[in-house]
Length: 275
Ligand SMILES: N[C@@H](CCC(=O)N[C@@H](CS)C(=O)NCC(=O)O)C(=O)O
Image (cartoon, rainbow, N blue to C red; front, side, top):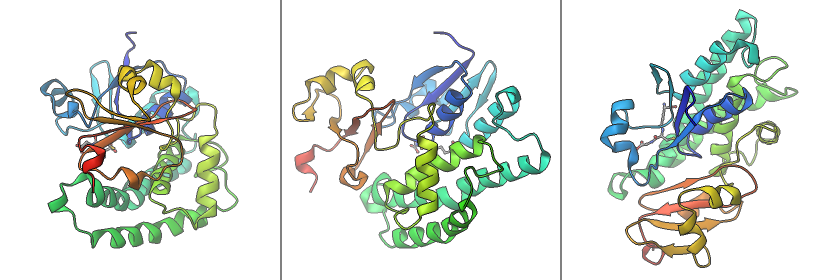
């Protein structure tokens, strides 16, 4: 395929936000998988596209966009006929507000938790950061919890791109057990993820994906879900619902796609050396 829109992605990272918007808008796009655990985001070819070495990136002709929130706003603006942006200026202001609330108030503590539990090298991790970040998240999450009472969407009565960003961010929070006492946010997130064009949940990967992905042979050959593939990181398959914390390795990633589901995990540390 050679579509105008190209999405550089690695699910289930923030690139899910963009995939979700593209799928709901029913826009054709080329998906380019950037394997983060294999450090493909540091390859010189990719750095030319995004010197920040991160996904997602959306390329639309000559335009290159490297921020997930900017990308969904761009798509909403470019395709107003798809109706994922409110028509009123006031509602567009609210949409921007909730997008930024998700990216700055909710996501940042989640990012700190991720970095200090598994992304930073062990010597750089600060255990004390984690409870502080959890508290920071909970303080701000209360605001959204109250806002969502008796609401289906974050702005008005119709879905907009802010919902994709907020719902994905809540799913991320759910992965680290930060939504356990938040029925409104949980209900909202569950409803959003049952939409027909929603991406798979973070804990979910499709067997279809496992069959069709280039790594399928590794997965297929895996014995009881695990094997060491020559020259490649470890692969594991797990069923929906296994806590992410179990995969707290030095360097790992996971990928998901359509439902129903298996999650594929890469890690560079063999499982038996984990402890
Ligand atoms: N603010 C950026 C953050 C992008 C970002 O941090 N992406 C992560 C995946 S969720 C990434 O590519 N990380 C690679 C790395 O940090 O090495 C956005 O929202 O698009």
